[in-house]
Length: 247
Image (cartoon, rainbow, N blue to C red; front, side, top):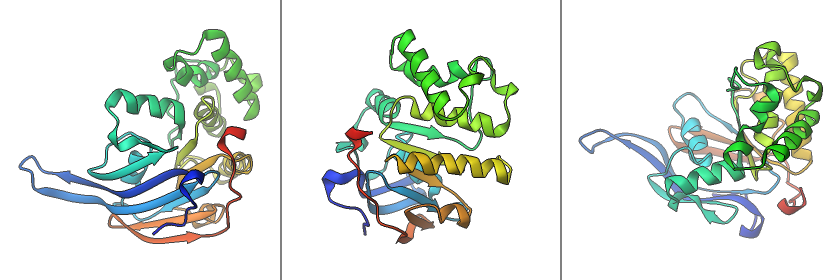
């Protein structure tokens, strides 16, 4: 089952990907994600839905290279992520994947400019370049005038914009957003969704977990999970495939 395009146009390909958790005695505790095949083309906006325990978090952890599959292959920009060691996985996360979480996960002791720089620091980017790119991304999300503020001095919506800037500063192939409006009021959440829409229109591939049907309606495609299985895979609108090198 796949709504993707040919391999050269896909940012992600999953082949028989599954995740099983075992008890200490080796018996199966839970089949968290049963074997799935999935292709996600460059520039697609994919929504993932499902009840608690359906496998959403497991799938997102695998896509984010935060966990390893039990079986199967995960190709990200053509590289088999499932076969990488821990150090290589860390490099993939830092260079190819941007994360936006429900709880923002900003470092309170750092200014927002320094928070945005963190991914570049771990990549060994020179200080001057880190600072310049941080300013550029904060300008992009409308917070260029708050560079020296700390997270506690910002509203929830502003903190989430900082989190988006941090996710994008490394120019990732993929943005993973886990309930990005879950801790925001409706008006503030709408502004974050509008920002994601803009990024998607510019060609960014976005995968978002949501419980909100209204949010899912903004996506190009909606994947629904149930008990670790893909219950449905609905293509809402066709993607105009982009060249990732042109972003």
